[in-house]
Image (tube, rainbow, N blue to C red; front, side, top):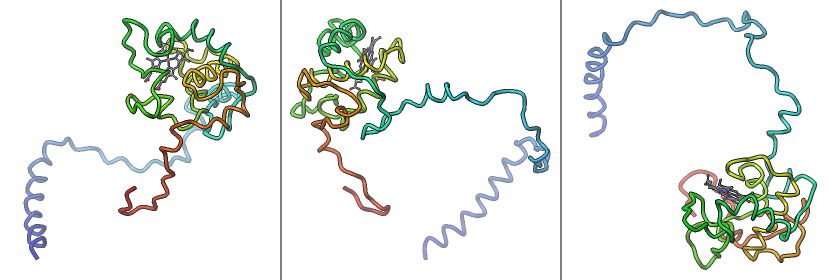
Length: 199
Ligand code: HEC
């Protein structure tokens, strides 16, 4: 019963330590538990978010496409927008601008056979994430500035440049969730129930 002895002997040490440190902590006045029912309805700051504000923030798109807006785009239009709004940072062909070492990974190129770095082509399991990400985060210096049609076109261009869809395929709320990403098969559902199971 070795552990019992250890626990028993640790007690006096802890007590000794706390009695040593206790005088260093300033004594707090005892505050009675406040009765929150007597608080005012408002403290005079903040306000209810408007429907328009909530709508502007509520832009997440689920893997199955739930949340995708109306609109559409294709790779040809997307390439033109890309040249204008993305190439400065991501390079003319999405590989990397000369002399620019971008923090992000290349947008075009790496397939399943080249495992690093993790990219749209070899790591993203859902095409819908591309729409969500570009719409909420890009261009890096002006997020939120793209129209839905522009985002559909850019999504189509990046998927086509990565050879995931054909160049002429129209991307919209119906066709985008149907795109099967090469990396989808690398992911499995985590159905562990707790405990030591490891996959
Ligand atoms: C001012 C520079 C800049 C511009 C312009 C820009 N990006 Fe980015 N982009 C970045 C940076 C930096 C990251 C990495 C961000 C991070 O990892 O947090 C990134 C990341 C990305 C990613 C994620 C890549 C990955 O695999 O993780 C995508 C997709 C992307 N950008 C698309 C676009 C598109 C489309 C446009 C044009 C509408 C665009 N970007 C314009 C700087 C830029």
